[in-house]
Length: 177
Image (cartoon, rainbow, N blue to C red; front, side, top):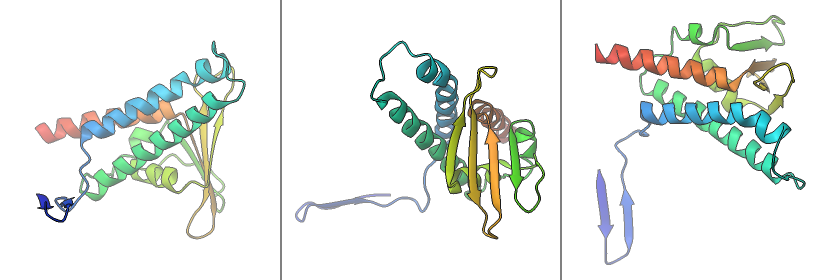
């Protein structure tokens, strides 16, 4: 609902309809941006054709990547809180993420998309690991759970974005039927 306020006092405001508006298209756009940023890392940062002697390209890339990854996680969480089911999404991440928690000490792959978003949002550290034998950098997030147990989540951001795109396709297809 829009309200233009009072022209005489110069106060203008907009009242939202009680929730944030995040479309599936917005989530898809963020996933595509994250995918592209992940795949461009090698050419842009390790084998550049430009001069980045002051490190400004690297700094800008890091800020852009983390802000887009965080925006994607928040957009997905918003969809889940608005009723889009996240239960049963473990299969989308089964071969994408490696998750370890201190008290368990074993790798797990049964994170839901919501779980992965929670880790992205609450990470204390974001590290990108580049290995020549891999064409995609590994993103490593670390943090501390509410019970004080340390955790690590490792994934290819491009593969994570692919998983979200597959999930979006499935969710939207089931809504049409």
